Amino acid sequence: MSLPVMGLSTRLPSLCLSRRVLALQHGPAGRGLASTPGSAGQNEGYCLQLVRLRDHEGFLCSLLLPPESRSSALALKAFNVELAQVKDLVSQKNIGLMRMQFWRTAVEDMYHDNPPHQPIAMELWKAIKKHKLTKSWFMRIIDEREKNLDDRAYRTIQELEKYAENTQSSLLYLTLETLGVKDVHADHAASHIGKAHGIITCLRAVPYHSSQRKVFLPMDICMMARSFCKNVPTKAIPAFIHTVTLDMYLNKLRKVDFNVFHPSLQRKNTLLPWQLYIQSWKKTY
Image (cartoon, rainbow, N blue to C red):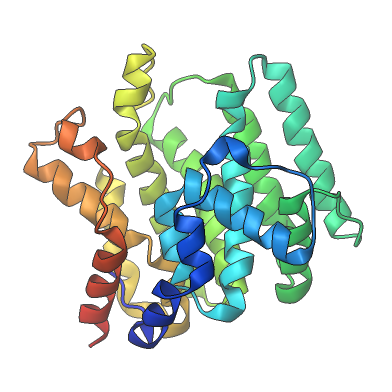
């Protein structure tokens, strides 16, 4: 599903020519990131850099959001990246649980105007104050990521859907709030698109998981997200731009006869920024 982004043709040139973004595109590799908080600009730059390095597709999609919600959406994605990588970075589950508790406490403190001095937390606090973001979505993401520390396979497709709903869909609900969207049709679309995103992410990770002798797979839900597009308000559409990349992966998967191990599926798409623009522009105009 390729959803249009209104006004994209007027925003993309300035984004692509931004010296700041271009500099970050060629910045240091991930391990150079420091988590010490700095000025507001440094904290924002930290979040942007983390998302660029760890969620490149999400980074590109965030650049296409309206300016008034872009930095907040990047903070949300940085928060998601931070939680998602806990399982791979810690050697013991107890350490992972401590990290999740840090973020649970941090979110509570943000809503009491006392955020911890950590770059992502400082940026999230700004986003919460600016957009009146709903605390329960943050807590749902943390709770679900914490459960996932057990590193066990999904027993049913329903379990995978629930995980995706509580993580990816919750992130979309928060993104809609940064856009000022409160609409039942947008929420309905976010629920199903989030599930599709989670399932496709699971598919894309099969080669990596199999190299570690792990299986997490339990696809029909991915196609259901298409049917909700016609009722989604125009203002909500930028939140769902990531569906363009999901569609691209599914199309490539079909072309290789659904062989998730095919080498072509692992290659980075260097043309993705322009494909995002072209697909969105075609749907808009």
